[in-house]
Image (cartoon, rainbow, N blue to C red; front, side, top):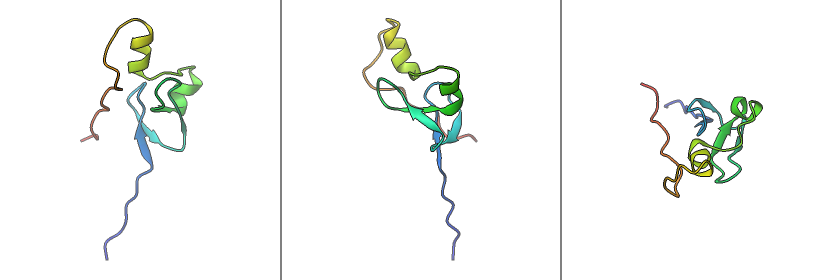
Length: 70
């Protein structure tokens, strides 16, 4: 019988680090995952929403997160 290996991790859309999903908050604009470290630093928006808020334009969809570490 194979062993089940569940992962409770998500990629932070502000810093790009992979953190436990239960230890984070949603982006104040689009709702994507922001890790607890960024939240403690005062980050409330993901990179995409921060760029749009600063007038950087961009697409309406949040950026694609980086792939898994190799």
